[in-house]
Image 1 (cartoon, rainbow, N blue to C red):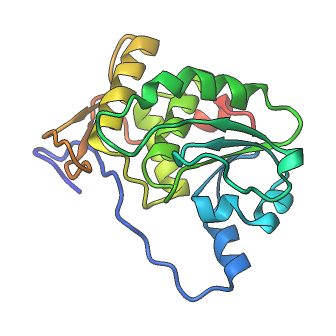
Image 2: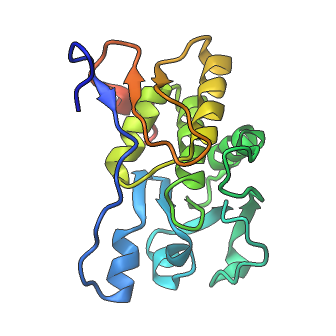
Length: 207
């Protein structure tokens, strides 16, 4: 995608298509690895025993807004609830620090962050974690998560909260929204840094 004089632009991504898969293989493929100790998925994947065991999940961040989710192997899991709906005015940022701290503290296994569809709340929380705990800019965090899960699409309110969080952490913004909507963000995110990606950012991650 181009904009104006050809400045690099980030797109929030478009829904992907999944072919015919067995139920187990399908959820395994839809459980995206962000790093060796962090996975991003939807609710169906979080409810699948094969996902939890094969990924050695010991901590779940539940951003689905649902209570008493019947996770398999629940006695072996720690669950961090994020009781926020996927609405632009929902205060997801209240949980940015808490979630980042719990992911960082989990040393017994790996962490799975999920919402209902794995498109809005959970990727926003993962981007906030990457900024706070790994020192990535929002531009870099978005690029990294988008590469893992191409159909993410946080709503416009969550983007504003992520941008405010980035400014709080680093004193500047690396992306800006063009056009603001109270619904799902349909505009583009313009890179403010003049860089074409996040070269070298893996060096700052625990892999």
